[in-house]
Length: 402
Image (cartoon, rainbow, N blue to C red; front, side, top):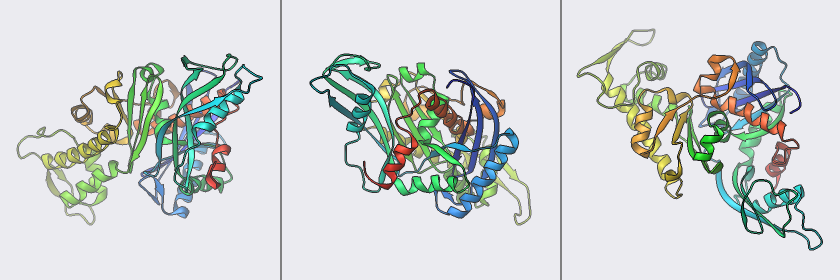
């Protein structure tokens, strides 16, 4: 990236549509110029279920972002999530022709294609082919094989894929507004770019992003992505539990969760109550604080236990030298860190994005971690152009198998 670049990240979430505009300096921090938002309508568990309403929400959020940043938005990096997103690790291998020994960039492209030569569900498309490690003639620890001499190039990759039509619906929703999609990015991967330093990636870390309808996670070990996925459960499920358990409206439940909620059991005084004042259509009442905390505790416990079970098949938890980092809107819940630490038995921190300037309120709000991560992804993409794992390559996968 030769000069300052205006980048835009667009996250269509279960609770909100967020559009973040930033100015990225070459190899430097990102200055946030403006954030546009609109409440989500037509999104369930991170996926579009009402195209027309989502289209309106995206239009409103983009208009809000343009107004606040004084930037005309022409292209975005779009984030996607949903339980349909899956991942796996695979090794690619290419043998150099007999008349050539020097490895070039084409070989690096071919080894990634080789790693994707696997069967995934017919309706799915590849989202990311994320490099883990190169090997030249069996030599480990190769950072960049280009110009090295060898007969065989191998590489390990973390491969992310999802249902093509669901991803295309997001793209179409944006493109119908006359805005180009520069790339489609898995939200969890984007969030990790905003939250983790290179040192944390090298030490090993698990990023847990708890949003409104989904929980995205990414595991780094030795600087490389080793595992990622999505759970179809998030903060809205806590709100629903509160509404059902206390028999109060959803709006009251959401406000009660944010303002008074705590995931810690036994933290309330005996008989301690919270008074909900009367409003139109609601008579007002007292609720027991310990019951509220219990509802929150068990839903969050279930979420963390589901995630731990998803990771039990891989040996990565003992390798997380930097521990667990929790972010997303739900990460602001009191007591969430100690509860996660109890379940995973490794250190847990709650974090927001790093190394940004401009709108401090946005940078410090964990609700915006994914949007900031999309800007970081875009910054890296421009710095490494031509981008070989870019959107147009992915788009071909949405229409047919590669």
